[in-house]
Image (cartoon, rainbow, N blue to C red; front, side, top):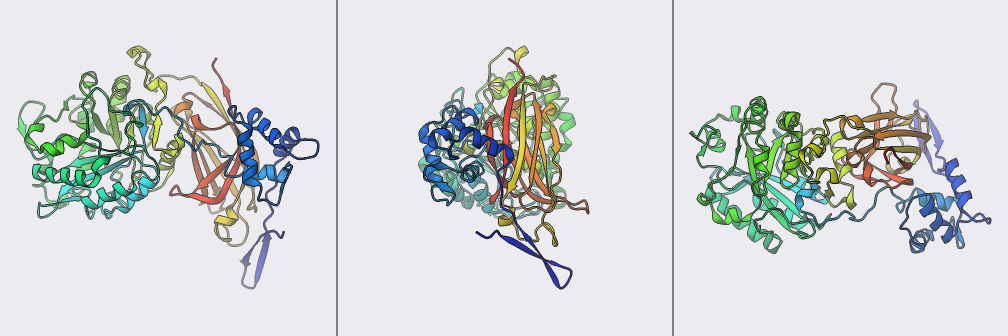
Length: 583
């Protein structure tokens, strides 16, 4: 069969034709095939089964699993009826049936909801930046189809005060009707995952409009809606399969509230009416940031109490009661004594709080929900380091899903764990009800627990997913790879491969070692670039993989574009091994 070629223009009158060589098995793959295959040069079902157990570490693999692999490759011309030839074995290694992560849900899903990290969105309705982009149902649909389990909607009265709109208040963002958002959530909630979807309302409504929201929610979701049974925990993901949960603060937004000194003051929503539009712009987020210093010095958690003064129907829908941080960052002990709640903090507030209350925050999250959201100055929908929240037990690390970048890729990578269902069980050290002195504290010195070894053999598929001149007008690409780990600070390690020049099917055969202090929270990041002498290298694919979920052995690693959508053909052949550093 003729090999594919790429022709590119060179100068004005000539074309250079580059023949794309077929991917060849690396030397180590050939050696492994020789070791496990029979004398006839074929690998039987028994041989493949032994390879899967001994080399790949799949101790639960059965002969039926090996037979399934054979059955899936029978259509290939390189397959022999008695077994695999070398190239069929190589095709299996780099194919869809030998990926680095398990595709099924395998975590214990019977613990209270607070025992899981949830794939969480921030301002889920925005199409772009936080200041002037449109609000739409499209980002909500996209997020749900990617497995996001927490959708945030900001609720505001329309101009006539007789209906509810969803928009980023105090900005130039165009609104979308609440009922449209609710309907697309109903239609798309359980396409990617059957586990519960939480809708967090940022409520800026009067009591009569809250009652209208209650009707909309009830009529839209019907039996899908979870009605809370108040107790000391929220049910498990298994108990809440295909359920919608509402989380917001008990109704109080337009009522007078008390400040920390017992004086009556107007609620923030009411007072914002008096601010001119130009001053209101982005005030919701920026005001949070401006008060961070004061909040680090004073302590006061305001529980929303006057529930009897608002619409009963609305209050009864709230499955997870939200409480608001006002003032400082102290009284965590008191918060752990009352009923289960959700507390929201900005990324900056969390960074301030962990300096003196790290262990208290972890203790709080063993029973309650902690939500972290981006600081207000992230106007262009950038994101932040999610590991600060995860390392302190925060279940809802809310991200702007509208953009791209390494932090969003890391978030997407973390939630490829557990079959991509949007729920990841927190490590045991964040859940154990130990005495305070024994609680995990990521701020303390940590010793390496495990070494991850990553050997990158080669890459394939770019010539099928990219046009011939995608990287260079006159020659094949010059690929190199950035390999790094993200996690708690001691686990942030970075390497780079050499550049393979003029090759659509590059081979590196380079190995890197990552000693990790908290491997259960680490994510492996792989980014491929085409080297450009101008200094602006071209993006050629990326993936992020949760270290705790990686299968050992030689695996196919599919790559994704900047938005997190997988390429159809482009992937790497990588070997993973682990070495325990403690007994």
